[in-house]
Amino acid sequence: MGKWIPLLSDFCYQNEFGIEGSFTIAFVRQHHNDWGTAQDHWERIVSRVLDTEAIPTGASGTEAMFHAVRASTVIIDRDHKGRCPHCAKSSSKRRSATLQSKTEGGQ
Ligand SMILES: [Zn+2]
Image (cartoon, rainbow, N blue to C red):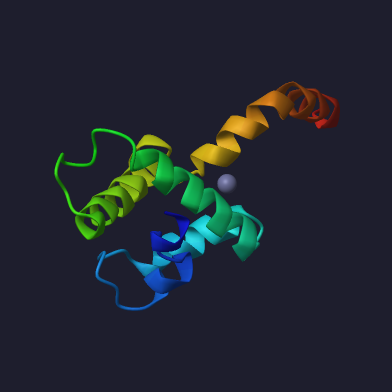
């Protein structure tokens, strides 16, 4: 299944999904310009969406991927304000440490 998921870099060019290159740039930038990590998180998000009702029943493999890719960008841009949901999940564990260092660094 993983090999069906389009590369983030594909969106920098004209693509059948209609995704803007700016989506890829913003997503990769969130991962400190680490394309490998960004691609890994992208694939996790898309494969999770593939298992939801965002995909019409009876959709072919290509149709299902189209819907999953479109739905994933909406989830990231609208529901998560452009943040990577996968990173958001793993960073919440570190939130208390971050808050503490912010307080110490304040006035
Ligand atoms: Zn991420």
